[in-house]
View (tube, rainbow, N blue to C red):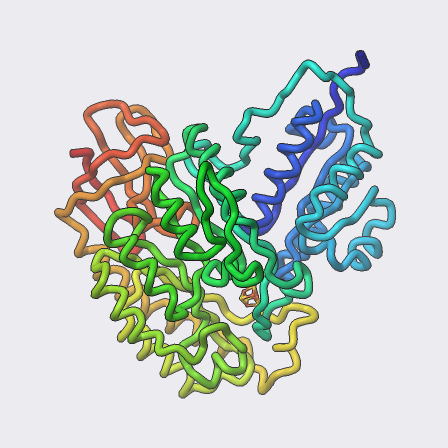
Length: 439
Ligand code: SF4
């Protein structure tokens, strides 16, 4: 048997939850082969930098991370979205060890093998059956597909990641089951377009346990709902078939939560953005969802100052916001992404106008959010504890996704534990967060 010490791998993971899932998969594989993790660049035999190439600011952050890893270590394997455009990386750092695009797990692992060959020990299996996770133990991202069939004009994800490729339902459910067995209390379903799940596979059935499950949005939600943990849906578009999953929310099978990145409300801008489901009557759809499931939390994101957006379009969006009364909303001033068709659109909205529109939007939503949060005072909610320090803790209700939504600050008579679900009576609220006592 090879008696060299196990090679050590450093990892920097940038970008969105989807990139984090890629990092988890790579690390799971490497740990399975006997690699150790290194917390420092200098202690590592090789460093993997999983980059984000979505916005120019994310690219700058990725280049900075590569630069640090090169200076401190020198043997650097670059992967992730920015790896799909290797020239920029090679121009800045000609000596990086290898560059691969997103979701190229095998190529990354193969590059690590070349940079720091594995030590073979057939008797040691370092990987717990659920794989290694970079997120806290009590919640996990579940990636159900790769790529996207839409062609939004501000986005280069399809260029980077290709068209939609769904994972068979059986594979997704087996992974979910393992995570639940390992103690995960909340599954966060992610993809580029969750409502499109299975379209590429013509909803083909696959085996899970002793039965066949269709690779279809509704069927997957129903089966995930049977696992007995919180299941939260991200990146859903307002297509009519989404209505079918709302009863599962009303029945408590999956969380009454929908993350729908609408990006705008004005038909002119949505058309210029080429957004999926832009012709749907979204307000009507939201009304219908609330009829079926009154507790539903709807989160969305918007862009202010998209090329061609007029004052009238912006006003339309503000009025729409008043009408829709969404629960959680983010807004970003438009930022051009190199290679995106939107860069050819015009007229460009000047920076000061963009900023002013962004500010007005946030002010308008802040009032809606504050009112909605205030309505929660005096009520009781189940809260999943994310951080605990004795009898004080911080967690989230079913209406709050980790990292993007607000949190509940909890006081308790008994010590709190991370990952437990407690009932909390809300005493105070601001526009984002809640405070309460474990009841
Ligand atoms: S839905 Fe649009 S924004 Fe989202 S990944 Fe696909 S093309 Fe990009």
